[in-house]
Image (cartoon, rainbow, N blue to C red; front, side, top):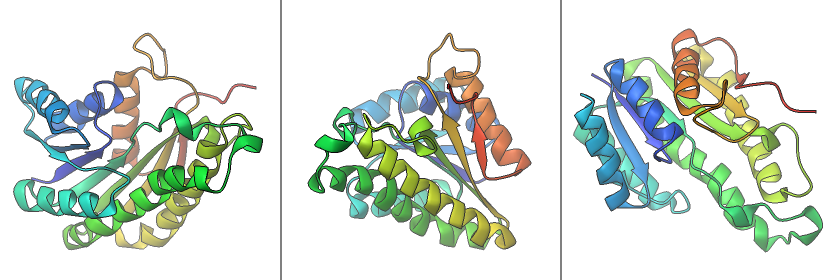
Length: 221
């Protein structure tokens, strides 16, 4: 049995994705900063018949991320699927002319150093398995920058470039890197962007392995 590791576990999309991959037979590793928060999410999944555990780590702290993912592999089995989808902080979204170089340190650590750290931690296990999936979830600013959200526009674009390079480089090793763009808010009542619909979309991307960039719905004009 292999593991689905979710970086950025939360009660919306994260929980829905964990439930979907867990239903497919994967053990589930939930990763976020709060151990108490993770305990509640894991208990909810266990009640649904999913084998799940929480592992506390901060995406802005590479050492804690690496340690958590190593512990995941030791405790639950090798990570076959990694989903990187933590929610960006509100202070990442300053106007471009009000954004200093210092303001970009946290967004870039969040969207570039975090993913690089996670991939480096799980890649040896995927190579040993002979397969793997790397799922990157981003908002619309990853492909259409907005001057009122400079931090995410810059950092998501950098994450997109990294993910695309992984897609091209790792394909011969049967490791599929893909990105899902969610242009608007994730809402329970949204036709294309509810947690359950997005979770099914992510599972489909993993299963079909067809292309790099996918959209939950068309980008608004």
